[in-house]
Amino acid sequence: MIQHNDYSDLLRNNHKWAAEKLETDKSYFEELAKPQKPKFLFIGCSDSRIPLESITESEPGELFVHRNIANQINLTDINLLSIIEYAVEILNIEHIIVLGHYKCGGVKAAVEGLDEEDIVENWVSQISDLYHFHKKELESIGDKAKMYDKLSEMNVISQLKNLLRTPIIQRAFRNNKKLYFHGWIFDIYTGLINDLQLPLDEWKEYDLLPEDY
Ligand code: CO
View 1 (cartoon, rainbow, N blue to C red):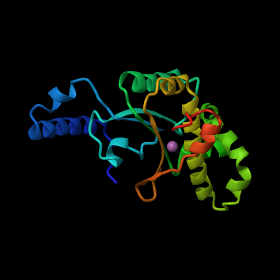
View 2: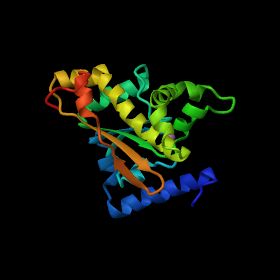
View 3: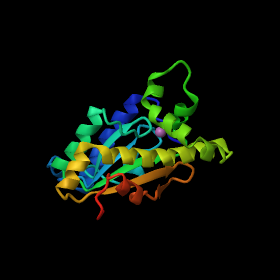
């Protein structure tokens, strides 16, 4: 695995990258400087092993991104809420993807805690609740790593449910905006993204989705 130990490598690589882009397309950066029109809003984990552009082969300008530890959608997170508002109301993005991943340190920390560090534990406390709610089912899995991976999947679904609760999304529905929601898991063991089945009927029952969604 290539490791950039020296920050100057990053700057050198950036210059190489910019030169290569210009070589293939003289107007590349002129185009890039035009207003952005991304089609996808990604809400993912900050984990360094999930570089969104690389794993989806996306180019600059294609993904509008928010990342935090364990891809939480916290209804009091003004940072995330303003990103969702900007994405839906200004950029008119129709596809919102919550991307979790296996071997997520935030998910594990929610259950086991971290040494002498409790800010992260506070941040992921929703996952701790989720774990306790589904404890029987999760513990029946037996294998600990698999249990955490299942909890990562549950977390994605649970965060999407939070997303539907936001006034921004509910307002978008009232205005008949087209919106598509996706719950994805990056399988770090294979490099593949799993598209999770969403409990749409349950969400409709909670009045979080319009009947005709
Ligand atoms: Co993570």
